[in-house]
Image 1: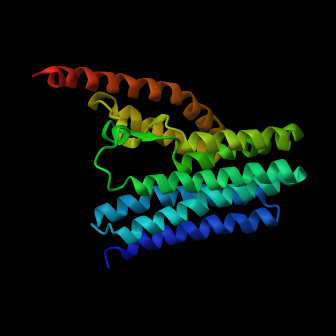
Image 2: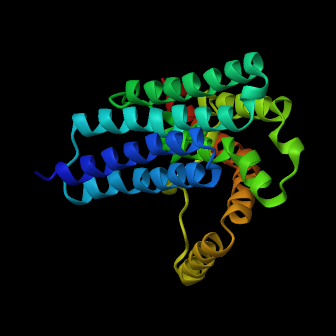
Length: 248
């Protein structure tokens, strides 16, 4: 019974992702994006609830991956396709397919490495590539900007298609990205961190699209820093093991 609650949350996230497609078909773009965002929030808490209740299971892990493939792969691809890419069906559908399939490949790679003992990125507190929820948020960045400005150029498939393909490549790439475990706060700034978190929540409520746009840009700016941090840790580990390997 301890596994029921987290699995129910995962199923609810799946319902939210599928509902986003329904609103996209009806042309209700803001609702479609909001439901994918809600699915991302639920995805972020189901694993923590499972660990809190000690309800982790292989079934739950597989269900979570399948839900993620739909919520953050299929749903954003269809939403963006219906919003922009369908005006250029060939290019648009190729980019949508690439994004959805690459998201599934990323999740398959993650599942294949669950039981692998040697995971350099994970052991250093980093992720390999952009995680699926972050990829979905980044893929819809043109939508956020369009909500703010209404500029027709932001809806051009020749702009949105390559952007979607770029995010797909970043998801399956080997770029080291920050994870929650790699973000360690000092005791003297934890209160300030809470203040920043409250300010972000307030901004999301009052100006959601502007806030999401800023968050996406800031996240992209962290990628060079996360890659450099991982390389520094990798060099330190190599230097620490070098004398041992050189010893007779």
